[in-house]
Image 1 (cartoon, helix red, strand yellow):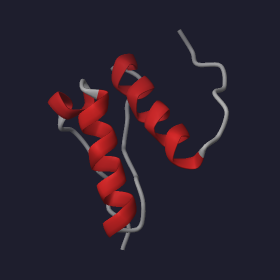
Image 2: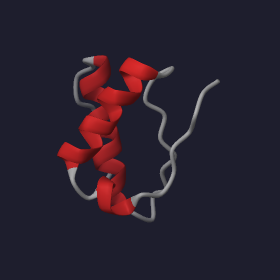
Image 3: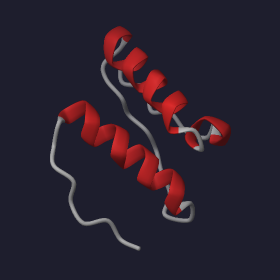
Image 4: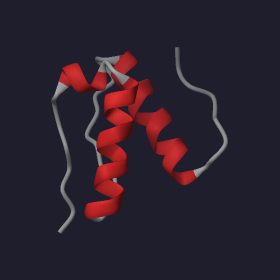
Length: 64
């Protein structure tokens, strides 16, 4: 089963907390899956940064 996480905005505002949760999900579940909306660009950037860290992909251009 893949669990898609949504909400939890206090966690999304702290990249260290988000990273810890993502690592936990990678170790215990089927990976890090996060729903995001472009209404909250800072949260999107956090999610994309963590995703890149987990997959070791180079940074691509982010919309501003």
